[in-house]
Length: 247
Ligand SMILES: NC(=O)c1ccc[n+]([C@@H]2O[C@H](COP(=O)([O-])OP(=O)(O)OC[C@H]3O[C@@H](n4cnc5c(N)ncnc54)[C@H](OP(=O)(O)O)[C@@H]3O)[C@@H](O)[C@H]2O)c1
Image (cartoon, rainbow, N blue to C red):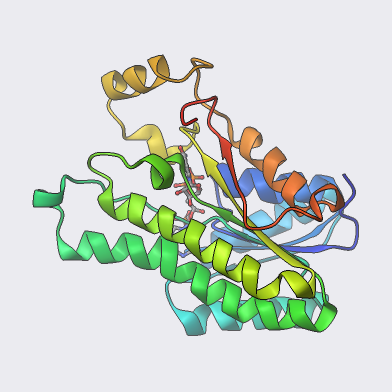
């Protein structure tokens, strides 16, 4: 896959899946813009990527929950690179609890970070994509958004919301050559699942037909496919990357 001269925006690329996506695109020649909550960290990672892969990279600390912070980030990217071809909405958090113990703050934090954020980014980016009559948007949802999970009602609702949002935007902008798809990873080896008790994780692995966790690269390869010309007639879809956990 060749992404030379494409500009890719990845939210939450300081580690885990986002970092893998940013590096995979850079490896294939794309210029990369990334954010995390920490400005110094985002800038340092951008510098590392630019040096390692010989592309242009821009990093910024952004609170993905805040519309103004996001729209300023997007404007900075357009000032720097002149356009945005691909947007990957990856930033996300979990704050797990059974409903009776789940407080309003943890409900709101997860919905704002995982779901409101994609309204903020997509609304800010789409006008630039419309001008170029080209765009690829990929949302990182989750298997949990498709099948539900006890203790994750906030997270599952946010991830299911990402799917419905993707399908609606796909219907709005298909005629403008903008595609929007979601991927639904299963359990992927990153910081996000580090806090899960070993027994719980072992039980999950036993229920995965491929009997292993996924790696961030399993997700980034699928994201790159959806962003590539090979996927130019695919929109409004959800691609599971979960070793068969949900089928
Ligand atoms: N790991 C899994 O098993 C799994 C499965 C299905 C779906 N997913 C989804 O995949 C995505 C990435 O997950 P991951 O496992 O790679 O997570 P991770 O390692 O915890 O990384 C999360 C990223 O999101 C950023 N972020 C969080 N809140 C933010 C905010 N308010 N503003 C800007 N950036 C923010 C973090 O930045 P900081 O470093 O600054 O905190 C970090 O870069 C998430 O949407 C997650 O829901 C993960």
